[in-house]
Length: 274
Image (cartoon, rainbow, N blue to C red; front, top):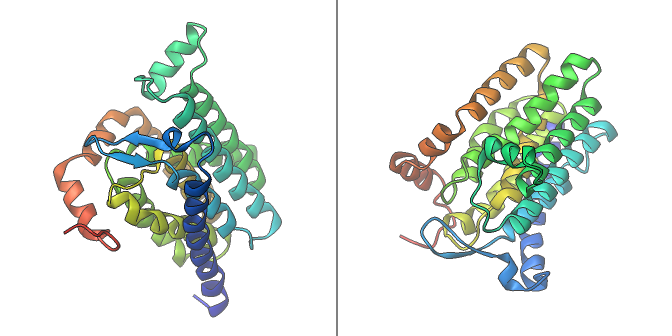
């Protein structure tokens, strides 16, 4: 990879990371609606903050700001829309035990519009809009929409324990740095934001929530779309649809002790605990 390509994605990685850290600090100081609105109990019953999620979304969007107009618009739209829908679900859906497509679509059939349904349709619409900006042919645009929305959902599926979602983004986005063009920049921005929030996530001081998981996943999907043709899009779309169908199994696997141990070992940087 040439120095120009490295400089572009290197700037995106650093810029997204710095912006995500700064965004979390600003939100913590501001705490719209009061600090309690931004606190949740994690899987272990510890109180954690939700600031990392919106901060990661904004940081990723800032990281792609140097891209040409169309890919910049696509990535920014996908990331911020997914983050906004996730934030709405984090806030409006707090305490709602329903999870998964079936539960929210079932409620919709009963005439109830849940925050999860808003998130589902909002992220899907954003994915299709991003695909329309990145691809020319209708089939490619549809596949692109599936990839962006599917990646957002996939990262949310694995966000079941500290560090799982951010670690997944770091692992899956890294190969994208080897590509040329906008895909590498978007991949770098998602990695920078994920790395910035990872120490607090691993340390169980913060959690990504739906906002951060969906935003980082949407960025990951946008990077895939920007770097692949129809065959690659179809392969990624098929894999992501399969992951959605077997979502419970994906989440169960991500929460197993072996995965927890490996993730903690790989992402221990910044964790103050032994």
